[in-house]
Length: 235
Image (cartoon, rainbow, N blue to C red; front, side):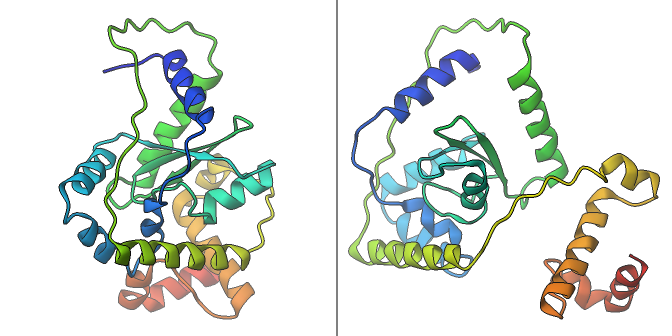
């Protein structure tokens, strides 16, 4: 089913205006790499939870509403670190603030990040486009609340993860800088892959900050430590 942007916007606006009390933050379990699988398995012991989780898995995207950010810098900080109203197990998550700002969270285990960013770029282009949509709809989109059946033990785990996430959130300071002096075209002209260049620059920044290597590509370092070190020295 294909819906118009106007119809989808109406549903989102209606969701913003709801005065229902917030339910349990079930998505917080996706912030923990060590506990996520165990909590997921305990959730799926009931048919109700299994259906809700499957509904999330079948979705093209998750739209997360950020009700707490008051400016762009806070929005980016919460986009990266906050576990409130998030579901990080989705390939593409769109985070929307009350000021109509959009952010994107990409989990690229299933799909390469380059593909996801191409989709995001297309979405951004369509958002600013003045072309009229020609979409005929027989059915209007609706928002349905997902229900959960949580044991006391799972609720305790979720509350503990919320506390851990808030503590981790407070440990980071976020400052946003728009760097326009060097983009993908210039990096390609220099003979580098933009993605590889970014990861190597990240390595240099990590080393200068911590005085040691903290690489997200652990497997690569174990297999080819010398080659990786040479690339760093080259930069």
